Amino acid sequence: MAYVATGKRSRVFGERPGDSVGDGQEPSPNSTQPVVTPRVVTPANGSRPIELTRARFLLFGSWEGVVEHVGQDTFTAYITDTYQDKANEVVEFYKSDLSEEDLQLLEEGAVFYWFVGYNDSSSGQRSRTSVLRIRRLPPWTEYEHEKARSWADETTQALSLWQD
Image (cartoon, rainbow, N blue to C red; front, side, top):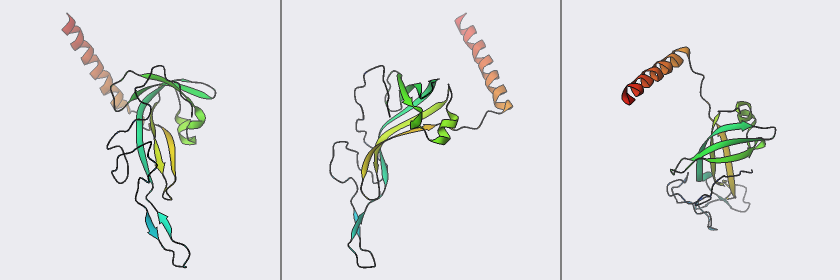
């Protein structure tokens, strides 16, 4: 996956207490120790015991984005860190980073979520993972459109009265 940020970040994938998904331990990107205590299982056939752990995802970064431009092989988007109040950043992703289902939803204006963290498999293998998901919402009904238009008209009138 490739991305290009327009500004500097104070951290790339910093630790965030409470963001682990699993046993509640805090994630540590520099740790070489097992994050989950393994459980030893002895197979019934008498072969060597194996260690099993729970599969989980340790979240280090989370962003919400809006697609600005869709190119032939890439798409550009504005993203906002969901944990920190920082200015939007511009990033570029390869379309191949999306699943087939998400690729069908990719268009300008689409909202997506980007998660970065460690994926700990049940066998204990750790890999750094980046997940992109396009938001899925049902289309608005005519009633919802009309209600939104009405709210926008009322708000516009209230603001114009306030400025007079």
